Picture (tube, rainbow, N blue to C red):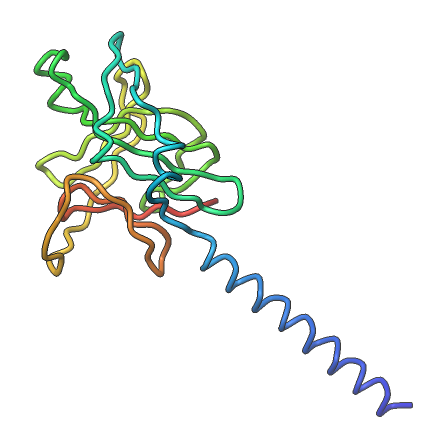
Length: 172
């Protein structure tokens, strides 16, 4: 009887370990950077910010699926119609349909403006232009050919780049 209990405990423990391992692997593999038609379908053609609407630069747009139905979408926009002070802090839009963390700081579901500054910060702004979040960026010195904007799957989540500067995005 004791052997049966030990074997049952061992089997149950092994099953629990296997299920946990599968969940961890799924969580690590769940981030998918979108490309092609899938990217075009999800990125909006324009974005409203501080009373103006600007066209999306589709060549400088990126999106990722964090799991089956959770997305992060970003794109640079044509800011030529904006005042100089707005253009200095606003580069494009940043949309998340679920809460996320940006470099460990919480960001709620919503549509935002964003900008990467020369002082090593990424700023997230509400649609009225008020700062919601500011986080320090990391510079990827190994990157050979930086693009103005891109997303890359990484071991620690999703890297959101502006040139060689990036922040890490994780699902909450």
